[in-house]
Length: 231
Image 1 (cartoon, helix red, strand yellow):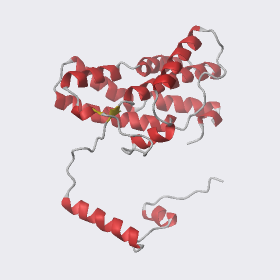
Image 2 (tube, rainbow, N blue to C red):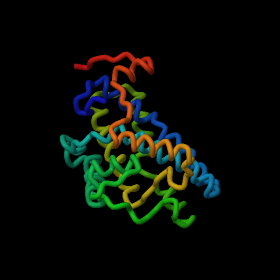
Image 3 (cartoon, helix red, strand yellow):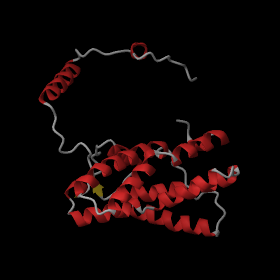
Image 4 (tube, rainbow, N blue to C red):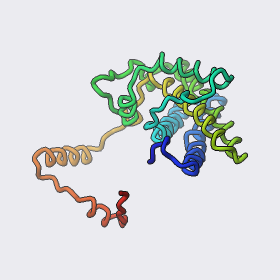
């Protein structure tokens, strides 16, 4: 994906349309509806599995954006003041680096990033529900609604740039909301013995240097993909 700061105006608009239509916003609505109905933990667990997975997918679009979202904003405007307060909160409460967060989304932890003590799957029901209510009430969901309205008005590039900055800071707030919690969607799932044996065999073959490898061209041919040079 191109660097957001290097996108053309058309590419940037297309990205915003993609972001506001990501599955995260649909799963949030379903999770909020379940919370409103006082649903069982089993029902909440099933939907939170999707919510968290959709958050990880959503983060893929923004994880390489490392610019200061306040840079270049007109100072002392109500929006700039609000974003400054929110960004100060993010920076004061963020405990992980970008690299550590990217690994966490893959269910892994770097040595520099010890696993959080709070495991979402082990929270008491009341604390679990409170956390889910906190997550579905995050700022990003309100900002997304305003961005959808703005996109439908054929706004200027400048207006979209400012709207994206607000959207990005709201995304950072959602990241921070997850910081103190560990969640592994595969935790507790049974690994079939035959799959475990096959996995062990493949690892052993790889370590012994006897594993069969494939070139990029062979993989492309197998799946019918046409390779194209991008340089």
